[in-house]
Image (cartoon, rainbow, N blue to C red):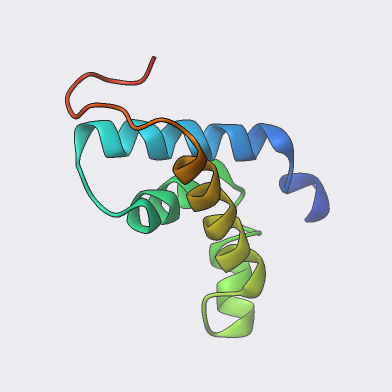
Length: 85
């Protein structure tokens, strides 16, 4: 898989779903949920690998987290303990 191919709408949708599930089960900050979801939904070449190459949270990784947070904030909240519908 090419690096650019790993950043796609399917991975974004998966990250948003995972973040919403995380928030439904464990109330936390949207940023915390988004960071965890991005780590799970995207290829490590985009997250961990890029961070290691830059020796910090890479701009790409940070932007992906921010996009997921924006999507979460644009969606209606899920009451805690009800799961994602």
